[in-house]
Image 1 (spheres, helix red, strand yellow):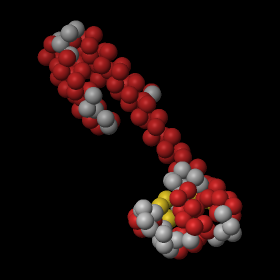
Image 2 (tube, rainbow, N blue to C red; image 1 turned 30 degrees about the vertical axis):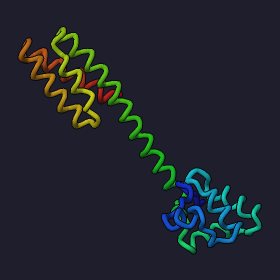
Image 3 (cartoon, rainbow, N blue to C red; image 1 turned 90 degrees about the vertical axis):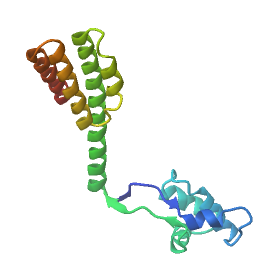
Image 4 (cartoon, rainbow, N blue to C red; image 1 turned 135 degrees about the vertical axis):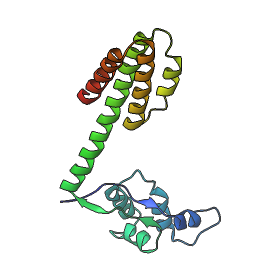
Length: 165
């Protein structure tokens, strides 16, 4: 079974042809082109094209003239795989955010008021690798204020939370 992942989109040429004063397209094709907004899928646009009297090939005519980009058709298994990858990335992002809050709370307790700079820096940790660099900095500060064992416990707790999600 073939399914489309993304809706059709206008090309730069289409935007130029739709500029005020440009009337080089037949009215029905122009109306269909206007409805191509990157939100409506190809099936909906085909229905609109039929309603405009263009038959089944209105989208094809626009694509043949270089006015729209039709999405690559993928099979259902490939679409499921793409969705699974997207969901996994979303879950990793959620896990990172919750771990950042946990780690910030923990370092605040361990440094008791001397974590202001770390609080500011954690906002820049937008990837897991940057976050782990921030964790390294926290460990250095904890070790300087307390000892290696507390810093090690901080790291283990944060890594365990990040892995658990």
